[in-house]
Length: 308
Image 1 (cartoon, rainbow, N blue to C red):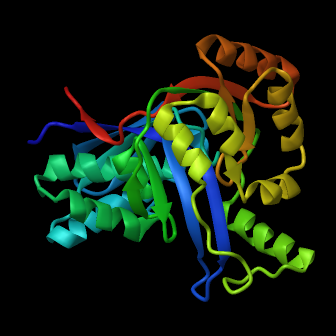
Image 2 (cartoon, one colour; image 1 turned 135 degrees about the horizontal axis):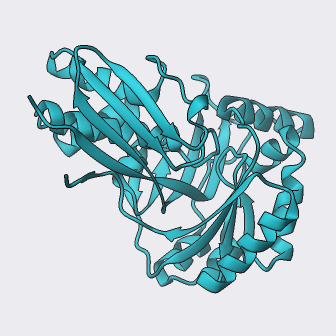
């Protein structure tokens, strides 16, 4: 019998999330600059008679254990493509915040794909794995690739970006999650309410910031802080006004930049260095505006197998 296989997959922060107007298919074109950070989930695939999911770690009770789980869907998609039975026990060890705008579910899907491919010996090409990822969700291809990348289309069309250093981050995790579709709907509603319109014809095509790309390439944290942006932040704040207090607490503690991570509700703070990050984290933990605080850095590599 095959031995269990474990894949380790990072979280992400969006240093730029430019959102185009609502397309006829219900999606939005994006210019989405992903940066992988050193918070990881681990997905272990072991032989089993049928597909089974178990989860441990922070907020494990919030993770679905049925076939709606993205990791389960990834295993099923790979099995179907190769004409094999999806007999596998997927055990997910969570360290990425659940429903926090840091692509934890997407990370688990990428990890499940990599682990199942190794367990079943399907020998899927990198291109095939990326194609399955893109079919499953917009953020999943980046979880496989890692590093720093520009996502176009729905975010699934990736171009790796050059980076010149390590960036130090603090993440403030809120109580409860925010639904990504709900945040996009609120973004559209706010645009309509402003009179600008929310459809693709009304909103300029999203483009990456050249200043942001330059800051990433040179590793300049101060320049990156001046260029970060998230078009979904007003919608996240509209749905969860208390996040403004978290953002203010981080800024007051000396963060170079404070922004909602993706669709939220996790807030991300860019710090000058390790010491500054610890200071921001200490202040946030004492502020009473968030549930937990995590300190890490990036970029880090994407999904990879863990040697037994």
